[in-house]
Image 1 (cartoon, one colour):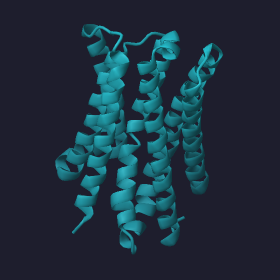
Image 2 (image 1 turned 120 degrees about the vertical axis):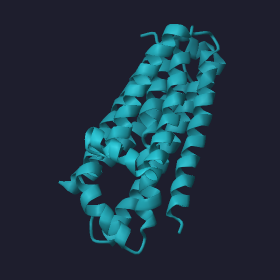
Image 3 (image 1 turned 135 degrees about the vertical axis):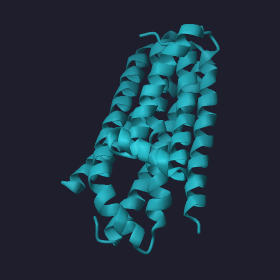
Image 4 (image 1 turned 90 degrees about the vertical axis):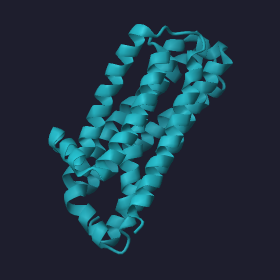
Length: 154
Length: 100
């Protein structure tokens, strides 16, 4: 059950990153016919970020905090929780709002997104930031899972 | 769906900074962390809930007074800079907080 929750949280998070990667790629060579796909991928990515937030949050509050955190903090590498996990859980909170901003801009700009170079560049940069933060968080999650297994909690 | 992009950018930037303040204050003040924990049962859940409510309230408040303009998407650059700075501050804070 615990491993299933961690895996679900991670897979949904990776799918969210992938959705914003698709938005980025579609926008690079955007045409009238790709506009619908850009909107769909942005909306899917935002929903997945919220689902990942709920699943990851449930695991964090129910299992990680009471069972895993004390073992990591008492182990040989307490920085895995004190620095990596603390940074991950708080920086993650930026993602839902950045995703809403990017998706809101995509839905509101419509044809402007294809014509206006500055609008397109702003959305591209937002997507790139979401992807980079997502990848950094995935890496931190891998480090935390490794730390948990090392202390016998994974 | 037509949103006020300038307000959306403002509310994103302010919410990012609210998360930084809640995070750091929660670590430095025991009474504030107790308040966060008492609000929802877990301090991290409270930070998320407060941020979400704050984001929605600030968006609607600002969109009433700020008109959307053609240059509004440029404000996303400010949201990007705020996010990068906020991320560095949170990582730096925990690094400093952990170092004996």
